[in-house]
Image (cartoon, rainbow, N blue to C red; front, top):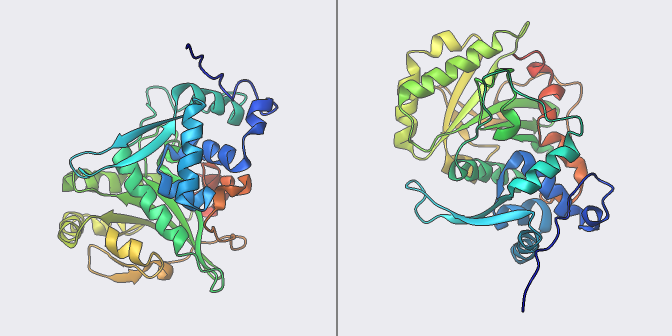
Length: 315
């Protein structure tokens, strides 16, 4: 018996009947993957489907439709690995035409759109998941926005600075802007110092800047000591515009809001006590199942940068 390939569900535009026939949470997850790049069944269950088995079934169906590809992700840092999903090349191109009908914004000439390896992105997504699980709407504490790496490639026109993520954290009426750098222990100290100088150089272009926070999340206390030591000599020149903090993955995932960050000068502070940034009003708190409907996408992609006053004017 011969079989024929299923036709692609996304073709020319949002009016295509096959695209609109997909459940809304499928469509929203697919649109998030344009920027989020990769997802596991566990993360998909948290943000869209509610249960892991439901997520596995829906992801398998999207693979069957040719919209996603599934693969095993592992490397020397994560030898046990885990199963992940990403948009196929064809579906990415089609979905990008839905999002940017006039053409995807381009980087300056000579700049290349690259992102970290899958394992690194998944490790960063783990932090996103931890913040979502810790949402506390009664206390008005939680994540109000999260921008993944690919959406930050265009943070500067030239793409010379590419943070791993951007977290917008709310503590009652206070709003905190925190860039995330996920360190898996593979970069030497000089590389980390150079990247932090790029933050400083970028942020000095902003008129009357507030302090900008950069949080480095490492694998162990030993690595935390090494990173703080490497940054100590350059902290004074950065502190005028950029404050650098270091914590471990275990600390942050256990309690994202109460996690203790330590500076190279060994100052300690909790996430929710970081210096606040000016906003017209506090943003709503993101909750689990935030991708069950599409209205959360605008605080989960590059549009966040244009909406945060302290980031307006970056080059």
